[in-house]
Image (cartoon, helix red, strand yellow):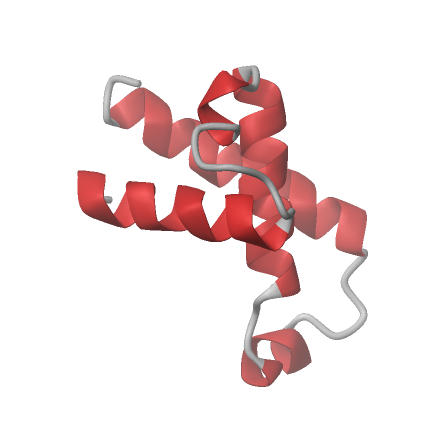
Length: 77
């Protein structure tokens, strides 16, 4: 992900939770990953949701968190 894309995602998450800009960056890495995963699951398209029908939501969130943690490791964050 490009830096601008990440910043935009962070702003969207802060707005979604009704928080002020900068709130997200003050959270620990695990909480940040949880929030990114939860935001993505909540904002999935109906097409994506149909693909995942029957998949346990907690499992899906764990998978999303793992994906983001792997991306962070690859990107050196």
